[in-house]
Length: 570
Image (cartoon, rainbow, N blue to C red):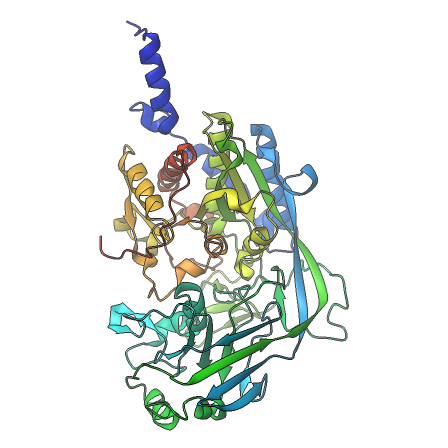
């Protein structure tokens, strides 16, 4: 017997269907993600024919063309350059000449330290600026690691202040497994704690926001395209970036003994004692440096010496609401991987075989396999985004528009996403959220107990409403997943929040969710292949991502950006 709804009931049903994903509208409805699609697409994306999808190689171009063909077939609108699906990403190698300095005034006594004489600035300091700060806070080691009860920032508001830290090796409670936390102290102070400037001890900080936060992972040298400019013939570049060089960046400096001796000359604890404690990895005090003023004169000359071209793939599914369709829910995944070994393979004393000159592991017994297929990293994210594009383009369309970006160069330091947020093909202020997908095809460490788990990062850091939407979407699925927030911890030793493309958007204040399955033994190994992918799990994660995006894209307002930070007690 067929139910014939009254006009009023039909209108009510239409409202309900517009605010819930199709698979939740009726029990047993066809899921938005088809395992057969995922398997077919990934079998090509992670095939040897694509040679590991290194940034400037042939294979990544084939992968981009493959995605383009499918987007065109599904009716996804091109949103790259000049009406195409491709956005050209300019990768610029730059020679920097520094004229930067910092002037320290202590109770009326003044000294100026120039770059290379007492202090060192990163090669990319951004645009010219002068910044004077009269609130200077010494924060011990400059670390927050609640897992080992070390929290230098606990109870302290450093917003707008200059932060000083000492002890390059960190305290005794911090072991070498937390190297990323030690290396990211300058970024943590300015980008997460709101400090206006930071001065630390030890080696000079890495260059600018475009530095490789993901550990400096580099693809192989095969397929490297030539560039414009002098190409390093007469000048060696100091850094390579896809970001604009006219951003005003918080000063980030390292100092030597002479600098710190003067800086702490009127402090309640003198530098020699602080250095002794730091060298011994003993606890350090925290205090305000009263009577101290810092003036930063930031002034670098930049000369591009080489320009290479890469490409993002960008498409849009237009929304249905006359007002909301000018706003976007964005999806992201990275198209590149680390290529193939074109040089010697070397064996470590532990018996692990590595590629010469580039990261990546060759498992013992497979020395002849020179291609890093990247099935999980990030072939799984690439094809999950394809499934999202197909679902939104060929199924019911939401009120907001959906933006898809397959980023290039994530393995090199988020090249494609950093370029996109600097040169967006849509109004970035109208992107209400970004959902990033990187490695969603396996179980963490291949444990069967992880079969129902997906790790989510960043969902509550900018908008707690976004996190609530994610959790409600998961709860409404026929088979909800376990949402694990372990990597959302600010003291996460892997610093996952800062390491993939979502962070480029989060740095612009856009709420994000990062979906990942965690690491496993085949991470950046030549054994990350299609045969090891858990397609059923990938499809379930895809359904969760789709359900989250559906709710976001039908929400009558942008998720509130309350910026409460990660809520670790749930």
